Length: 68
Image (cartoon, one colour):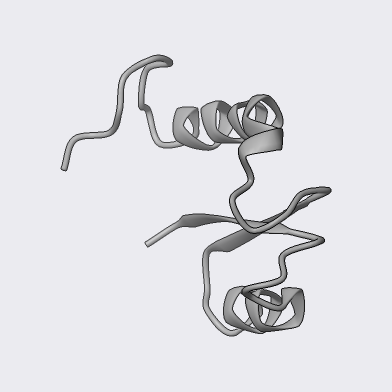
């Protein structure tokens, strides 16, 4: 299953190296590292900039969540 994985470069709860290993060990994982902490609240706009094109690749219209 294609998955978009976000990680904060300054995350003090989950080490970036662990997220990198997780993403690298699985096919179809796309890792985006952002200049943020664990909650990623300061980078919501940049996250959307990655999320929308990712979803569009699978035919999901912008602004609508994928069907469960």
